[in-house]
Image 1 (tube, helix red, strand yellow):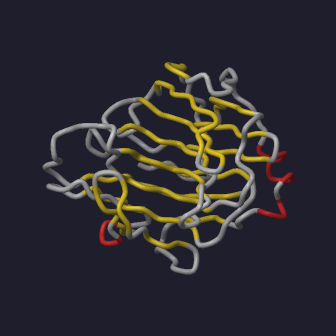
Image 2 (cartoon, one colour):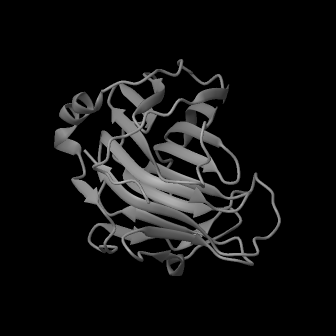
Image 3 (cartoon, helix red, strand yellow):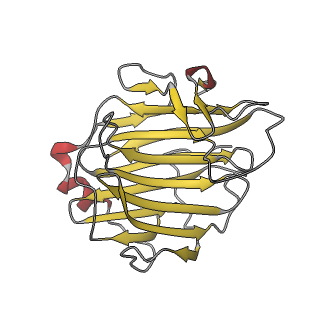
Length: 240
């Protein structure tokens, strides 16, 4: 059974593995900063409560472009049975992506996801400015499929400004977990299932960004060509 967005979130303990020296601040424990973030950014928030009963073209656009080792193909995006499926097909290193039509300048962005892609692929939930030809701002959650490694990163005008990597205490392919990005003018933080993992207060993105999720094959990971179709499944995405 996948996680309902109305269910009580189980606190999951995670341990830090590696963090780059780009303005890193220590991981924190459970907090309840949600209301403060929402109040600080109410005027610039995307009103989003997406259960994925369908893919609404007024809210989402499927990616159709090259990325990493393959192509993000709209044919690999589907919504069967109330779940968003972002597929990596057998025999190729193609993937799938959705992006919100609207941009926001802050808030809390959450996704209930199960990352069951092949080794060598990435499951990503992130904010991205998405202006062609621009040096874009970005805030990333990226899970390296086939492992328990997860990366959190900020970018300002195309330059990486903060980065941390953790080892998850659970298998991200085994079930759904709630991954969150909290973004305010003076703070970016990341949580999983209500546990805050990382917080930065300097060198932060400031320009309005879209909400993205994708499944793709980066050039810096290697693996055999996949022999079966695989999925990044998303139960819901919310912004508040």
